Amino acid sequence: MTDSAAFEAFVAAWHPRLLRAAILISGDRHVAEDVLQDALIKLARRWPKVHTDPAGYVRTTLYRDVASRWRRRREFAYEEPPDHADHDTSGDSDLKVVFARALTRLPVRQRAVLVLRFYEDLPVGEVAAILGVSSGTVKSQTHAALKRLREVAPELEEVLI
Image (cartoon, rainbow, N blue to C red; front, side, top):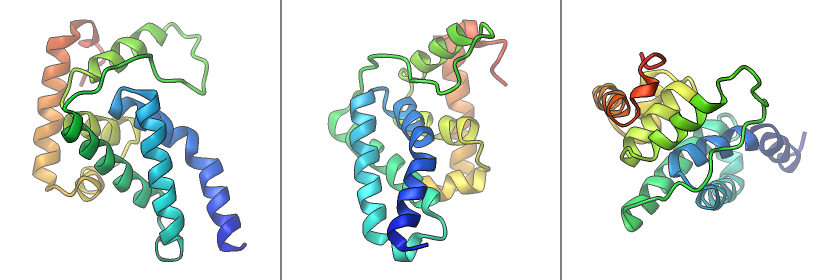
């Protein structure tokens, strides 16, 4: 498989998942699309060097760029719940919308930690590497974020660990 074909296959397979994660982190679909597009452009330029772990590279770029935009702008306004590829008919949809909106009330680093840990299901060490922080910071940010979620969305208490 050529580099170009491998890159295109990666984008086709990972784009929906990365976009949903970016929406959850940024709280804005348009910002998420822009940041993801920029991350994929950066990946394309570095493909020969990072082709062995493109998802890790894009995640790192994505979360750092969202944080950078947030620092410059100091706020993201949530406009709509994120799209879900699996059309949930189990009755959990309302809970997902409440959770997505509650995420927007957290600082961007706490959002990133929760999305990486629980949406992307990554271990503490990998989250620390992506965000460029220590494992202890990931753990403390996770604790602080879950505490804040309990405060801003008490209806989530039954599902928060």
